Image 1 (cartoon, helix red, strand yellow):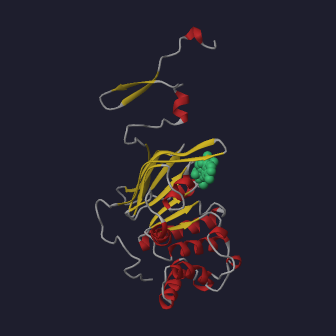
Image 2 (cartoon, protein in one colour):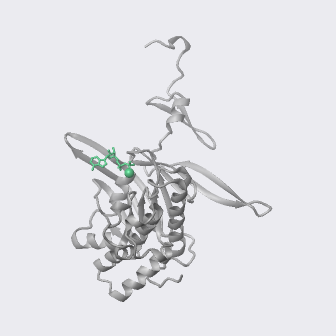
Length: 313
Ligand code: ADP
Ligand code: MG
């Protein structure tokens, strides 16, 4: 299919793509019932225009909180977040409504939260278009285009309940893309699907990213999905703890070997998270010694435990 100039962007190859998302020291504290939960604890993140990024992390690590802030549904307690030039700490009223309708598109895990059960597939896509005043003819053109792009050509007249789980999520993606957002935010979009169906939804997201040039941020539990995007960031305790970069290197026979390298993330003020298994392996406590060597920095236990103290409290 061909896309018009309002939906394609970023066609020119640039050596240094501009960031479309920038989070600096993002903090979100939930308060209620006398308890305080620090869902985000100074998170830094940069996503390039046109990138497809996976975010992974244990349940409760702050992934949905981050997506909620980026989608304009929630506001940070401190720190800054910018998306496509909008300052998310300052958006209010009509500007915020417009941001949610046109700048970002969101897909959630349950398609029942993405789609209206009483409307057909075409009507579901028409709704966000109508909300920003798109005329009838442009609406029909856009609906046909999106149904086609998501492999739902002959499904336009069906209601969500008459679609398979994978089709429902692809329709959710079409709805999220209706107003040609700069960024698509998907929170565990394959969480309720079996592996094969999930792979189909991921393929649809990749096609959206590659063909429409839309930046895609996908939160997932699924290691198989995370393994298929170029960059995965891991969130731990409300901060980015590590990043995995993947690339395909050509060997001398021209075959592509996938190389994958995991990096710890050093934040702006020099903080680093040492993975639990490393701390355990070296029996690291609250304090460590740092040594600067010629080509690396060493991290040592505070002091080796004397033999004869073993086992005494
Ligand atoms: P994830 O999506 O990675 O599972 P969340 O962002 O949903 O994590 O949650 C991060 C932390 O914030 C969790 O401890 C969760 O219980 C808490 N949390 C999330 N939403 C709320 C809320 N509305 N009120 C209070 N605590 C919340
Ligand atoms: Mg979540």
